[in-house]
Image 1 (cartoon, helix red, strand yellow):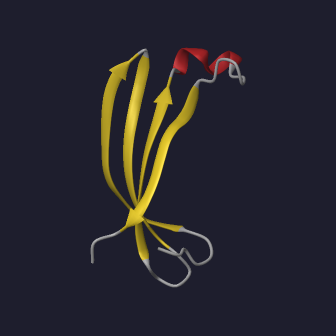
Image 2: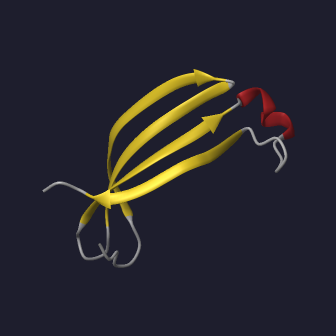
Length: 74
C-alpha cells in the first residue's frame, strides 16, 4: 500500500480509553494521501498528566506507544 505525499486527517473514526498507570487513549483516524487514497491509522497514546510540569525524555507526560497504518475499506 504505497503512500503518496503527506497524509491529511479526514475524520476521527473512534476513541477508546483504558485506565492504567495513567490513561491509554486508543485512536482510529481516517487519513488520505496526496493521491486521495484513504488509510486508517490506529494509535495508542499513554498519558500521565501529573508529569506535565517536568515533562522530559525520562518521564514523559504522554507518549505514542503504538501506531499502525492500513488501507481503509472502501
